[in-house]
Length: 534
Ligand code: BG6
Image (cartoon, rainbow, N blue to C red; front, side, top):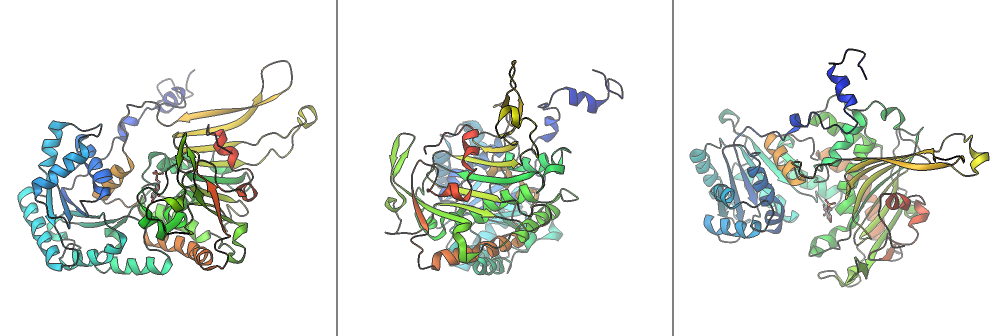
């Protein structure tokens, strides 16, 4: 095959190399932050630090992706010295696959610890002195990230004490920046989210606040925008004229685990919908920004939230099904119902499952239902977005085949399969006139040995780079709460609260009745190779 522009035309060569060519990957290595910095983890003796933050930081160190120099300062209420903290982290990390004893020794030399009393401002002043001292000794130039690995009730007092100790100040003259990282929940409803933000902004400005959504940092989730806006063939059909409905699914087999204290206050709508489900919706539905930068991408995401049609709270059941898992079996193992989990209040009405139908009131999406489903203790862990296209306007084969032609479907698999699947019809080979449905798969990760950056690593690197594209802007947080707060109020305050919550057996696909809200939702999961138990 020759290129119209000659055989050496580089674009043409790439095209004929095949659809899954990985040419160009070399240019896509992780960007290494240039600014030296200190990462302060407040709540360093907790679970998040041992399970996610330290392994991610160690991996980044091993792959040469941390800036030089860097320091990590753990803070917590537990009295520890630097050595005892290093020992704790060593115990937490030594079993991980990536652990390398020689690299650990060097990494551990950059770990420090400061005992802190969250109620005592003097304690934060002492932390600031330690950071100044480290800056002087290591050359970290007053660039600081403070990661709040804390229960949300401590965000306000801790951020205020940090601010009062001068840790929110940006030392521009001395080349220093200061960033605050917070995990969800960002409030409990609209009013508390606004209050929380007001408190954080007492000492930290919007550009200094990094509100994490770890879903956005997943490779395949980031790929949604690349896929939509780097291919000319999808955008023209990405609208109400060609798309029948969209299913966004994030189910998991895990139950509430040891997090009942948090989950009882939250439930699935706050835990998954206010953030992860809304973000997936935004990526699928947003308009193309004119530039790929944090401000413009975040603006377009917010416009999606603004277009959400409020749910009619007088008839919530038309658009929302809530459930709670009962006892059941998962992977051949009996598991208890939610009410029997440690820390769950007797008779709790916390929902662990929700299916919601939402509409976007804008030109592109008018009339297209988006079905958002998330639940714990379901048959399989699946995260995917399925775009269901409309049926062909007229089937000239109907008289011969006597059947409906299955419409095209595009599935963006996020977990377990990171892939894009397109289904379409072809003629079945043979003398008879028959159609067959075929699928074309693009496996996102063909080579398992490829270096992959995990979601927390990505979040940490982007914070060091000061890139807020994958983080929530407060506007987005408020718009999503604006949509969900009336729904939560209505469910939590209604008299038939109890009747609105459907118990489903663990290990299934949710409560009975979900088919009525979206009759065509389950086949997507089946089609992605997931076998349900119903
Ligand atoms: C978290 C929720 O944000 O996301 C958890 O708090 C949930 O309840 C988790 O289990 C799911 O994340 P992932 O990456 O496993 O799909």
